[in-house]
View 1 (cartoon, rainbow, N blue to C red):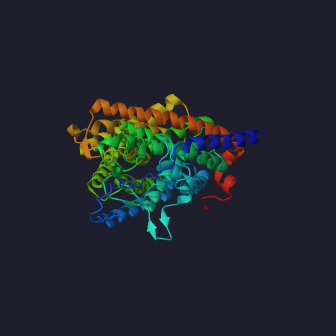
View 2 (spheres, rainbow, N blue to C red):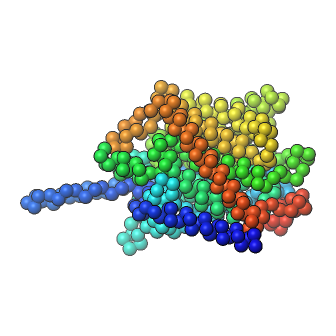
Length: 497
């Protein structure tokens, strides 16, 4: 009976959401540049003007974005799977690999069915249209042999929309997989898949829409219509919040959901009483190194063009990560007596997380400060803060991703300032004028974005875990947990010695 009520609740939630998403008439693809308004009719005697050819994608941009997409794919499989897998105990290694591998595949499929449409088409301030790009319809016309284009951040500089779809699919998938670190070693595999489906639908897609969706720079043709065009964008984008590659969308979103999951699941059997060391630090180091490499696609690829902004994001990602490795190691050395490999690897991830919203939005001075700060702040997040909260966030998803994401999002607002070496941001999309509203003004905007995403994902995660628990139950039995998830959930083991 509990399962029946849960299923009815699930369908009720979907039914409630669908009218909300469809209340506005679906418009052109969200990422696609708006078509130019029809020109006024020419005098009868005048010869017909030859229309200007539509802009075509630059092959260099396309090549860079395809490469970036592959790099982000590598960040999940194998990088995140190895990073997480090395940190769990041997009896749960295979289950961690399986959850990441299958979770990534599940979200990719859902993204291509309805996720992209909900996130990156015009709808309202919270959701896109459910039907505009359902099953990716409209991205390719087989009759005409034409591909739809998506906007970048420059006027008359399109990108094939399917490239953008694929790039953003990898973001959605890895975000969902990040949550799995908090649930490690005790969650049912079926529960993981059900939860990911619910959370992806009601947290990831609306947050991505609120933060990143706007009609594209080509839609801003004159000052008279600029406000109307801006009103079609996602809520947080309208506020003017800066999130270059996912501080809010990816890291705060997943980190807070992970904390909620740790609360719902409870502590692992023996937590705080038995030693639970990582079973293979070598794999964790390899995973961290692959994450660092793949993150160049994540951050520099978010420029959507092969240009100077991509170069800035690339260098900031490189530098901030190295700074965070050193600061985490130094903090660990001072407070714990010895620097560890797990600490250095965790420092790298902390630096990558914190620089993500800032990558193309701050200058080199900002990268130094954000990287050095991230190592120390996230070290506190996985030690002092974790003890204060008292929850078993198994692989420190909240302490690294949520804490690092919040730090990076706030400091982005500060170091975007040209006076601190930042590039500023576009303040007028009609003229493409770059400026800066002031440190306190931008910091307040960033704080509002952080607060909204924090509350949104916490509520959605709580409801999603509750529904999942009613349907299949969240946790394996104590006996299965003690024996290990590898053999009990998947009937195989990672190693045969």
